[in-house]
Length: 111
Ligand code: SF4
Image 1 (tube, protein in one colour):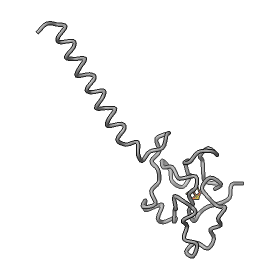
Image 2: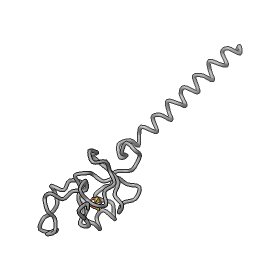
Image 3: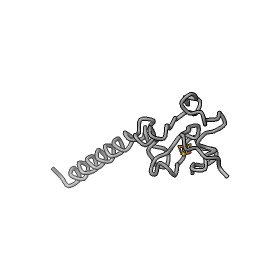
Image 4: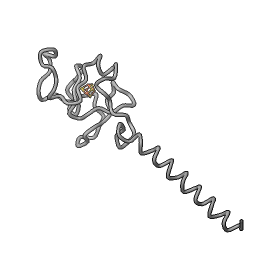
């Protein structure tokens, strides 16, 4: 085997390693937002405790009499996402993102 054959072999291995790393990285994209926070699931224990709904239109109005149709995460004081974003941070769920159209029972109007 010549030295050049050896280089080609290393290059081929390196390409394979980069491709594998990219595939592993892409596998986790489904549950993460553009800036890397995991999207809060309604099944998360803390989300359940606060009656988080990813879509405020689906709030059980009988169970949450304080809910008003105009309330959602995007206009909540605890929401830290950009005004036009579909998801953003919430002070009550560090490291996670909530849906801008979501809601939970500790909603407080933005000042
Ligand atoms: S505290 Fe506000 S921003 Fe956070 S999940 Fe509840 S309603 Fe949404």
